[in-house]
Image (cartoon, rainbow, N blue to C red; front, side, top):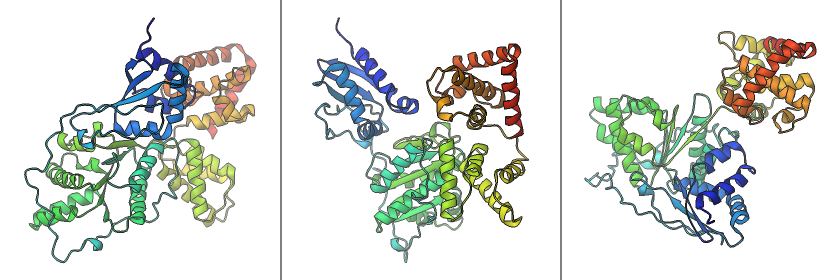
Length: 476
């Protein structure tokens, strides 16, 4: 029976899935589609040039192993990149494929859209007396790559940002749009990219500006009849960092002028970096032509930092300030404050202030007292990380065992208790709870909750476990 490309790739995916994290598998491999199989050559369709570049940079050996295992050592891989009207301007030239096991990228036939600006956008008008070198970057020197803590929550965004800093305007990440909720590090990362570019390319003009300030400058230029000077000033910039572009929503005239500036910079090969509190698809009150430009490059999200990242952020902050703090206090803060980095740093500052002003030693008890005051006006949701720690401390086992695949009775029991309390005390879905506790599915979580409920009613010793852990969680 003749094998199909789908069958071969399905087997390859099974191998890949066993060797990388679920999030990486979902992000980079699920979007790939097998196109055809000819002899020992399999053609895979990837959704963008960026995905191809990421696979080549990070998963070459894994892909080679999977395909060799499935098809033999003489197997070859050919990529086909999806192109659309909007992204065709990126180009689809063949790239050098370093491994002999892979063939060239196929060149899809695409019709390039008419270049925006062929109707005669004038060359930038240099404002009399204004020299490029005198444009201040407005960058915050404290927001560098050195003090930006990398974790699973922001790795893609940081990697793309660093690539842009090494080759501004010369990657397919143009524009680079960083998005995520407040306090997750978008502005820090945007500044870090600008600072790195200034260090590497002192001759380039880098400018950071918030969308609100840009809007106010535009309004002032209309009032003062200096719109042309305003536009030409922004056309002088080599790297434009526009913060909080979601605030452009509903402001048609501001969007129009930014569209004009965006097109000019992009056509000149200048780098554009944007930040937003939501993904492009969720932006409200935005013109479609501007949204389509935002989608030309890469949109990378920053998510809530996990426990390890939160602890690393606290340690880095303490180290930078030359302050020592007990590990158990750092751990308690990281478990207690889960929403965003800004809130986490605020809690740390509050604790340090309480310790200094009241001349009290920094302890877990002081941290608990501070946290209660820090979040007294909000309803604090217990985090799944915190539940896992309390359960593991109760049974005197490392958290790693809880997340492992072991089926030992005591580990399974602790895992089920964690899922039970996560469902009771958090707003997470069953699927989300399962993914954070041993990468289980929602059916496993549901089964765990039923098991705990049944044992609580029938097993006196088990009921003691439940009562003890509940007290520790609710009184923490």
